[in-house]
Length: 164
Image 1: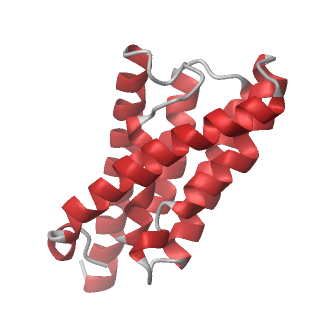
Image 2 (image 1 turned 180 degrees about the horizontal axis):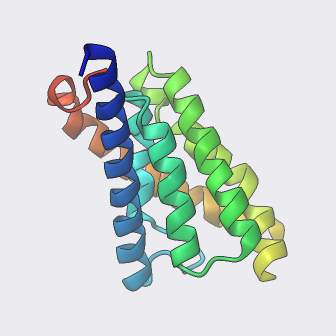
């Protein structure tokens, strides 16, 4: 196997591991009742900072979110648009990687904009302004606080964990 092929395998394995970790963390939050309250705290959303370190996180987060939303019994619009919000956030995080403080901003913004109408129309929960507030708070806690703690913890080992 040449260097180019081994790099592709490494990125595929990293993406699969990120997807699996996302699913496990989401299911744990669901089991603890933290992902079904007005302010949802998903431990898995902390992983949305990973595109800062590796492009493998983009498909990993998307697939992980898609699978976890299906496994958790989400409504079809939630499965589709929730996964797309995660994908958009991951792509933009990767593009903004020159500034680590920007890492949590794209997933927070993508989810704050996309998810509130989904909650209203897919689940009948609202009003819309309340969904905007609660989703944004949950994303700030999950991506902003937990995600940045994860970023700082991984930063020291990034060269060994996330070779590109």
